Image 1 (cartoon, rainbow, N blue to C red):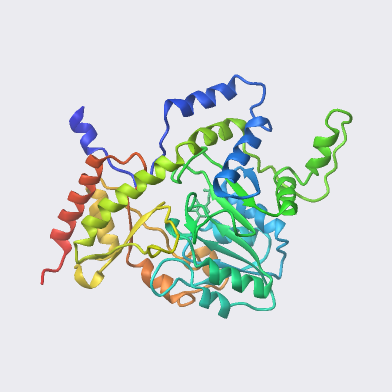
Image 2 (cartoon, helix red, strand yellow):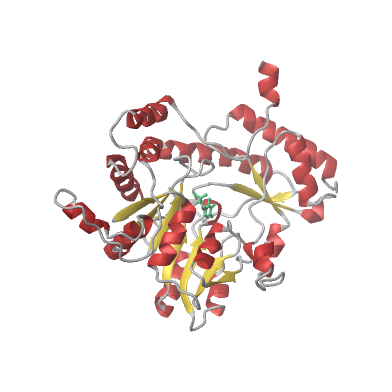
Amino acid sequence: MKQEMKHSPIPYAKQSINDEDIAAVVDVLKSPYLTTGPKVKEFENAVAKKVGAAFGVAVSSGTAGLHAAMAVAGIKPGDEVLVSTMSFLASSNCVLYMGAKPVFVDSLPKGFNLDPADAAKKITSKTKALVAVDFAGEPADWDALLALARKHKLVVIEDAAHALGAVYRSKPVGSFADMTVFSFHPVKHITTGEGGLVTTNNEIFAKQLRKFRHHGIDVDVVARDAQKTWKYDMVELGYNLRLSDIQCALGISQLKRLDLFLSRRDEIVVGYDKFFGSLPFVDLPPRPSTGTGSRHAWHLYILSLRLDKLTASRDEIFSFMREAGIGVHVHYKPIHLHPYYSQQGYKKGDCPQAELIHERMLTVPLYADLTDFELARVETAFQDCFKRFGIKK
Ligand SMILES: *Cc1c(COP(=O)(O)O)cnc(C)c1O
């Protein structure tokens, strides 16, 4: 049994569920409300408070949150929206949902986050919004991005699916963009199974987000008249993007351990930095400089392979590590290179920096429940890998 455990593969990410989480879910199952009940508001308030936002709107996924944010930003066919190409597809699919056009922004020359200078170059009279991801949990260059957005009157949507708990220059992620979208997929910092939440300081946006997640029905009226009338009015086309009380109860319970999760991630990163920092075969992940008041939330730990010092490509190293039972991964292929996007005219060369770094990127396992023993297994496997593929001087 021990032996079997030792050889079970280590994933790149994993949820952390305890008995309290389970009890919280069971409590809801025994209560009158499985959905649209009190746990939704409680979860929304808890997340909003945690990230210093005035309002929180829970939705069925991070993708649903991005979709709702696009709708509330008023994005229409003919509009252009700037999007980090180095991100998960959901960051730009939400633009396509509105019939609008994503305009992909390249990565920084040194880093994974989007380059504000490239964003500035790509603004036209049709540009209406910006979707910027805090990549891997590292806050983007928000001073530059917000200044750019104010100048050109763009709605700023922060894709913070990687960045719950991150801080940008002393301001928590979730407290400063027009709308910030979090995801509670099991690979993220906290989970509700599937789930997401949009934070905003704009009361009108909050109301519109609630309407959009509930079929386009004016929910304020529903709430006010709930006791007196059957009437409700659908005023625009919306969807059912609600998050259930079952999921919100799990989220409330998980959120209580967010700080613990973040500090364990920090600890693992210290270990990885020490190990990988001593090797000539990789560059360490980018991060905010110390003393800036920023905090990396370390959703992902992504190495940049020094391909000039290796006899293997990233994909060969990926296969070697997977063979060794280490769940390395690649985040991400730049969005504009996916076939669906190629068919719409996006092509190689559109974002050269992102394309270049993509070839070198390798995500290493990182999650709160990763044990020191597993960490050592990851490091041993990498030692074997570099023994095999590293070029000796
Ligand atoms: C996970 C993720 C999303 C989508 O979140 P879901 O909850 O899975 O819909 C969006 N953007 C980024 C960058 C993500 O990592």
